Image (tube, rainbow, N blue to C red; front, side, top):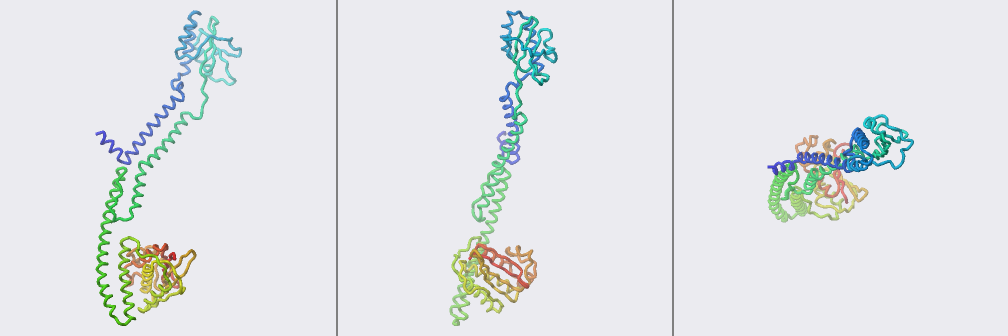
Length: 438
């Protein structure tokens, strides 16, 4: 039963915090008490001034009542008690010593003895109970009592010590909270960051307080569901890709028998492009990197080819830029990204210009400008997400597409260490710019 209660207490964040506070307070009191007794053991059991005056008065009455022969033995017995050091005066009472006539000590002595004390320049009540005190009995016998001196006040008093320990306790509490409570949260965050592939069978370890374990368990279940959906989607795409290879292969075999080269070669190139697009789409949607390597490519030739292909279909697409410019890029990825941008541009405008410019630091830009309705500035960032078409004039047209062209172009730009920027074209239209490393 006790073990179950302890497990319930230590198994939650609230229980750990409560235990932490209780242990901290108990430790604080224990350390302060030990410090008080160890640093001032005499002061821990110190008697009050009235009690001290009463003991001195009792001593004087005992000595006065005893015979001179019995007094040494009596003093020896008194020294074993709580009375301070007492001895027969080895020298006469100092002349500057004043008689104690008032206060608790004078009333306790009565007529049994007279007390004398050398006071300082600035004396205060109670100073007669500090330092050397001379007692003169009625028969003239003199005794000296060495009373304890008052301790000088020091910086590390009980109040300062308590504040310091409270500060230390707070630091310990926060440190423990960081290690015991926040530590598992940070490990959970690091594990989630490392878990890039939702389809993997690796789960985040369910450790830490009960609340955190519940959150990790919910995350693992969500990861399993997402992984299952992604696996099903990838399987479906793989099946579609496999099924498309057969008709593409048949079309390619039939195209080989076309005798007119001006028709055969472009058709074979389109079929190759279709096969490559099928593979690239599968790779893109499966969340893995493109298998295509970076190769030295003549970008002006590539962009001119894209412009000519659209021009052959009756669109007003032209290329502006240098005639020669080599850069290390993924040829098919750049072809696909620019083709998507030009396809969007000719869908909404009747004049499209593809341009190429170089920037400092081995960077370059590929821009596609059209004279269509454009995209409002507030919607541009959102339209880069997949299957988002927005509410602008471009997306209300019947041939507005499915909202994947800009997403693909963005991913290609990021794979080349760059980005895509959508801006207004002058005097009207949209200017889509791919900035990449060349």
